[in-house]
Length: 210
Image (cartoon, rainbow, N blue to C red; front, top):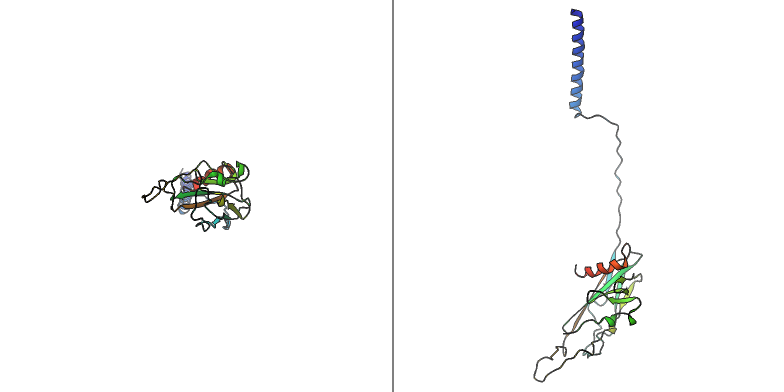
């Protein structure tokens, strides 16, 4: 009985020692198992973005007329927009005209739009004063050439505008005679790739109020 008991105690003692070793190992390694692992070296790649650039030779118009009368052209030369882009598909372009200093004056759409209202050219959008280069007012056209012309010489003071100067008064009744009229032209462009001709119109109009 004594030998059997001694053997049992020896086995128990051995088991306790093994458990103690395992617990110490678990504490030493944070209670995790060991696995085969591998690590790849870091790789870095650089991507260069393209650009869309627009230059206007008419930021301040040098060809504006003087002493203009109803029926006269506002400008004696056209403006040219120069396009610089890495988009091989081209650019969509829009312009906005703002007139100050003359009551009842606005940029006439029929002076900018193609004759007969058909073909590719500048069309006034749903927002007055903003013209899109396209096939109509809702569909832009890609400009792949380096520049596009704006037909400013087609803009005239309409003969329907009346004004009268009464003797003794400092200004005419319509404030158009001896007035300084300022015409401002802004231009915006956007990439063609990954953008529909219809959505481009919406985006370009929004760009003027951004």
